[in-house]
Picture 1 (tube, helix red, strand yellow):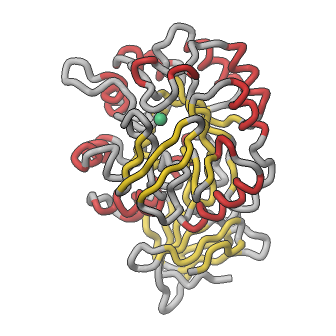
Picture 2 (picture 1 turned 135 degrees about the horizontal axis):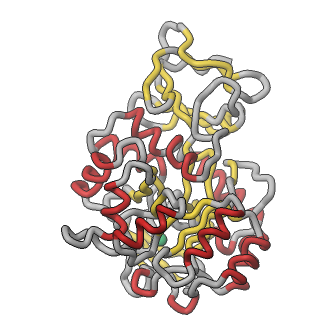
Picture 3 (picture 1 turned 180 degrees about the horizontal axis):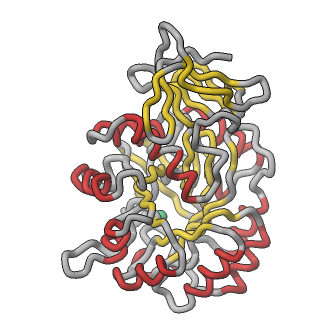
Length: 366
Ligand code: ZN
């Protein structure tokens, strides 16, 4: 089946021509000659950080909750994601890990992003302090046994964090530095251990200063660390986002850090985020203490926001797909290539979602 598009996004570049899907659900080819093609085919979006969506808090979701969140995510172009659990009591995390569906009807579930609980006490943001833990390999082993963990955010400067990083790498699990007070030197030590990504750069992190650049400066100064950002117009000033893009072109991953209120179409209200009651007003999400507590962002809006900063469309789309897939080392998603599963988002000329395919199956049709 031909998609009838004008161009496709392949490895961050716009390749003119139509795209063809095979009957077996894979992509047959791109760059195919055609007349009157409309719109652009991009790799389905990959979101590394989804706390909730479409009215569902994933920390407390059952199979039906995952189905509803998944349907809402598909509407925003997300074809793969990592359900993300913030710091919570061990029993709650174990229960949430056990509740992750093995086979999902909607977008692909690539595994869980465990954001915490081994975080810096001074950089918790909205994470409940009573759920924070010092590095504890036995606790980590119990969590690993409870469900499909794919990515762990931790603060690398904590005493004993090195052992956790090594343990996770031995299990083939990606480590991301976040909710951290790490200096540049402490960050470099983690990068030396093979850590190659940073969670929501600049947020819940030691601030960048000219003689104390911290982990944010260290990550931007290298060329082998992927920086994840929440580009919702609230978490980062536009100038900051532009600096990040200039320093980290091709290694910037968009994440939403969405909570249950995202994807509901509501502009004001409240939902739970784990044990917290979180309210949103005019696109800003805050916990009871007024601290930013996730976002209302959707991935398609993150793409539009990045493009609006002057980033070429193909590269903005790559930041929502290919680059985040690279973070978790999964090569079968986030790219358009012959033989790969056809997870595709078709955008019209106004960057609205026209169609979404998962494994060659049309799941959203505008
Ligand atoms: Zn966070």
